[in-house]
Length: 336
Image 1: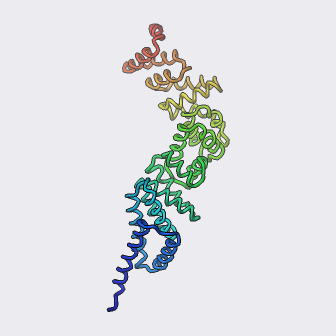
Image 2: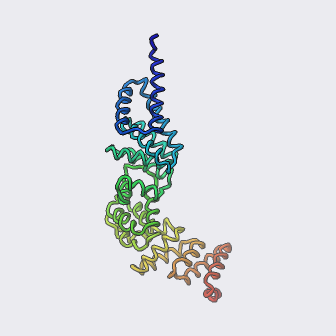
Image 3: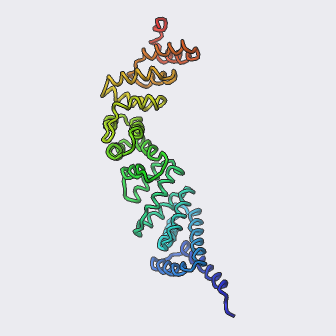
């Protein structure tokens, strides 16, 4: 009895499924993998078989990624071979789909395995990087450990990541700011060696965007304020005070860092900044400023709190709190 084409396709599909299973659960040599890959490439030329084969591979990779454990060395080795087959088939849509699944499902280890296999086979990873950078903000909240592992895999340092996130072709909302904040908070050396030089010398956005990045770093590392504000393309020393007062009255750590810089470098500008701050800040902001800026003019702040209390009696609580924090000023109240 002559078998129909449909029956032959069913038999072929079963054999393909069996071989794909064997890739995961049995030992296959590199030669076996190459033989299988070249054979499958032949069948991929047939449209009615192509989608079945690609779907079968996708399902098996996804299934394995869902159950594999990091400590299962043997299974991980087999999983790598399966990923190598996927890469050698050179179907970019399948690779993109798998990478998107790994990233969206927060399976970062399988994503890194697929990335490593692509690099070892000399493949272009630009598309993989675009997906990774997009996922960083969406699914991983700019996790430094994940970024550092990624940089290790591709053989780059933090300067590279700053440059990539500064690239206007990469639309990753707020990712650069988040990365700068994370690195400057966690690593002084990396801030000095990788963040500050690249931002000062290479950032080509507008002055307001530049000052925002400066503010993030100064919040955590005020010692770099001078080189940042002098800039390269942007010298913003004469504009930064207004920027802080206009946009960051609630950002007490930035204000503290900026005041440290001004106290050491420009006492007159510190006095101008403080005068403007005191004139427009809310009572709760004045109270916070008086507590955290050690060289603040507390007498002037007290006078302003008295004025605000006169304007609105509900502000009296802030005046009371000020005296509680600084009881030495209590005797001045009758004279104000």
